[in-house]
Length: 307
Image (cartoon, rainbow, N blue to C red; front, side, top):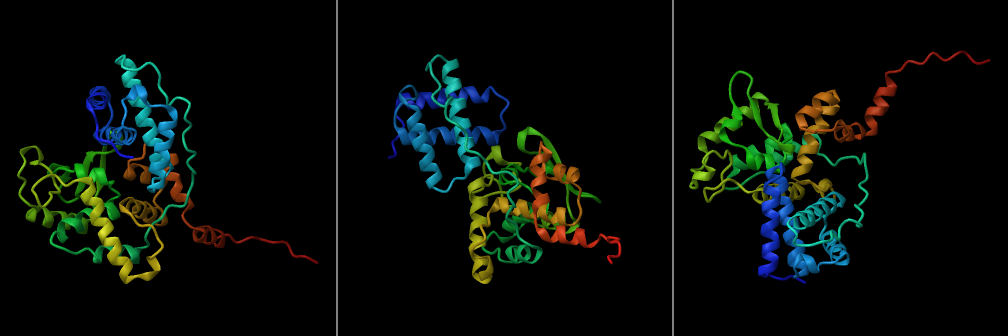
């Protein structure tokens, strides 16, 4: 079931936009919330005051059947809950039907999916096409600097600070500024890409580092598509990766895992990843049993002689 938005439903959505723009949400969160709420309204096809708890739960099932995980389901619920809080404040509705819907239980300390060094190299080598240099630069920043998709999308030319110790400085998740030092080889690729960067046609996007073929700031969906296309290519070359779920976010996992395996302490890794809570970073301490075996092998127990 999919409906176009009638005038009343469109008004609900516009009121919600006014509400979240007055809050300190990041642009990424605002966009996600609008997208989630619009998806629900299009599915149900009724104004907010006519939507019941069961409608929301049915939509949750639809989203889950499409492949969404627990975190995405919970974000969608948070978006709809915020939507109803807005309409209650505007006196458009009296009841928030989400209040008794429980969030999905997200499993903690799940071992993250990542690529080893050789697999990551194969991934980058598989990038091809008309915009190879741009796409390679974006993927290198995910795999070797740990940037999220929306951070790649939001990067401006001035966020790349060149010099003897080049780095990126940009606003990440939670509207917090983050500084990520860059390996000299990565910085070199960025310089080369910046010199060949496409002309920006829209004045509003004039500072965008990554530009689409139409001359606009590159969209998050295009970034994800670049990764998806490359994943198909690398899996064709490496059948052993066939069942490994590789995505743009898994490149970030790869970055974090690589650091942890090389001995980077959790506080430093937390800063590099831009995590507000170190418990989010601690998932990388559960990477593989090999590290536990190696740690135990360094112990030299003094066992008393047994008669």
